Length: 93
Image 1 (cartoon, rainbow, N blue to C red):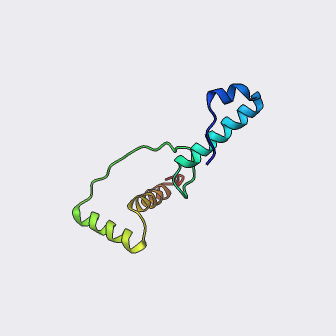
Image 2 (image 1 turned 135 degrees about the vertical axis):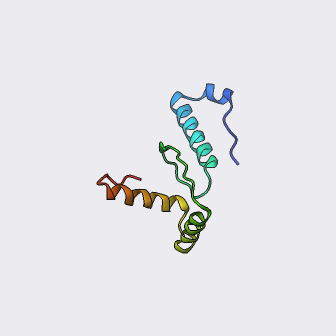
Image 3 (image 1 turned 120 degrees about the horizontal axis):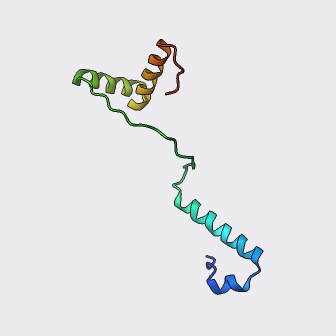
């Protein structure tokens, strides 16, 4: 395993070598911090809203999600897009 550069090492090196060394170490740290198989994306601005269902409707939505192997949020987005389409609005959910 290679030893990290110390402050004394950085003072002795040429500026270009220092910049390259710092850049490489930053990329290694970022790669180590990210979980395996993940991709880095810019955060998406979203707003929260809550919906209350009757127990029967909640159970039916949960069963539908299980049958279709989809998350409830995906079903919610589909429902909102269908509602938007019905009223002639762009499907942006």
